[in-house]
Length: 442
Image 1: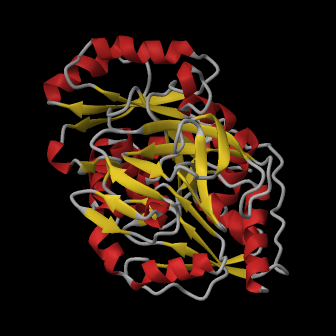
Image 2 (image 1 turned 135 degrees about the vertical axis):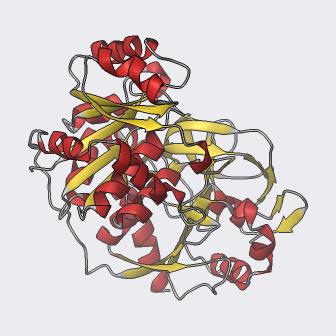
């Protein structure tokens, strides 16, 4: 596949790669190009900004969760009809799991044979920038470095101290614009529906970057030669699965939703904040920010309707914030009653409780998931769950904390709640869709 593509990498977290990558996407879109955005790693927030800017759903590319083949297939399928793919990196270019290369931006760039533009924060440096760039270029000669973008340039004099001695192509010098920073909260930047400021960086990129050169570099990328298998659809297994989607529940990997559809599910999106529970045979509750909407969640009619559905045996799968919603109550500024489906209480905490990749397997003797399935995903939360003494778990983790010391997937009846944001495997999606089909026939 001849796909023009480029990776926007950073020297470190906070160097400005998200704003610059988003600005490049916005500038290319303003030119009339169909831009397919991607984000390296398990992030949910940056892709929301990409999607709003480009009008195409941003996808995660994560070799740990999806495998190298999965990264290529997602890239190819998602880029159909696009003129160019722009891939935002994660952390610093070489930062992978446990100090390794695994799931780093460099790893993904190597898998996709994609040229790299390195974003360098030049604040507080002049000639030292040159040594920094040279070190990144030399560290892994197998990567295709095509140039740099120098961020937070303080003045024309600052630029003149750096530019003449550069030994690699510069695609732009971005002036310091602190007033355009996107607000953050405990899980990262605010979501795109709360702040549309990322698109403003498109104008800055147009004024300070060589877009023609960036496009030309992307077009020079070698063809992707990996054979991609066409997805096998199962239209004969049609069943409706409700997916919570609003300000409180908004963390979903797009591939998970697509995989549910491939397994035969018709997805019905609804808002637990405002809507009644739709007529569905199963429910998927993703993560997000329920802690910011506790009063509305407590007073909504959906809360009691979900409890009745769970009592009737409806399969419900919930992740992180969704699991908190299924618990008995959430303690924040005060105590709020939640669905009361899972035998546990949730407490919001001022400090992070877990952050990192997760790996485990499903255990026998629980709800709708067959035992022995591999689960890979990510956890990141500022809450703590206190299960009852006789709590039962659906997942045993070999990596990650989960709910309690490697135990995750608290369940009651056909409802399961996890701190793990899992990347759905075919076995998992078939289990969820199959359980919905069985419930619909009751």
